[in-house]
Amino acid sequence: DIPQTALQSYNQLAWFDGATNLVQLSDPYNHTSITVSAWVYPIIDDTTHVIFANRDSSSDGLMIYWAATNGSFVAKLNNESMDSGVDLVEGEWQHVVFTHNGTSQAFYVNGEQVDTETNTEALSVTTNARLMKDSYANQYYANGSITEVSIWAAALTQAEVNELYNDGKALDA
Image 1 (cartoon, rainbow, N blue to C red):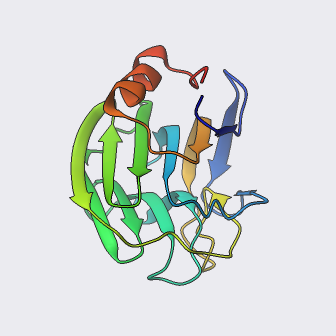
Image 2: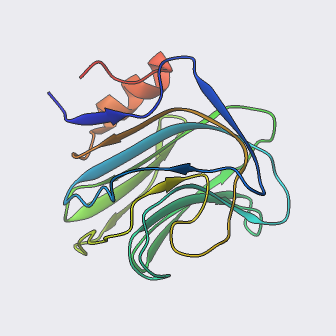
């Protein structure tokens, strides 16, 4: 079994206004291995919008977001950024997954692995994580909706990510 923190029940949506709404989590999710998964319904404008962040500084921690400047999803672990290269689609649900196993990281959008890189940097933060706003700076509120947010203290495999995407709900792990 994979240790999982399911942050929402199946079919539970959370809408965010891009100005004041966020979810403050009670854990920094400071794991050697980690997976963050969410279904995202982005509202696209000219700013950056955080999906998940547990950063202590601009170069320490994990931030997953969508960026208007490049029109795609981005995952940044410490100083290592991964751009999905997948165009944001406003008005459509998109599935975003980031995994890190202590030696490498992978980024998935809609069940497809869009990037993988070697990264031996540890995720070592003390700031409790947030959804839909940066945990380090008072910026990057998200405008849109999320559902089926889950965090695992393990790096899911490609097959497990595909199962999440194809089932459209959290794994029964």
